[in-house]
Length: 70
Ligand SMILES: [Zn+2]
Image (cartoon, rainbow, N blue to C red):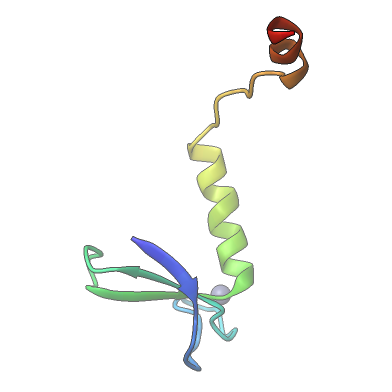
């Protein structure tokens, strides 16, 4: 899977969205076997959706790590 800027003039793949696509998700393994076009708004929506599912591990505080090394 790869994401790259859309080079062609095409509409966003999300239903009900009429924005121009800004990014293309290239993935041959997708059920529709093709590219998925996303405008910036939908990409952001997708990202926040993923963020809710994929909860990142709480990052280690940098200052704690540093004080240990020094
Ligand atoms: Zn869109």
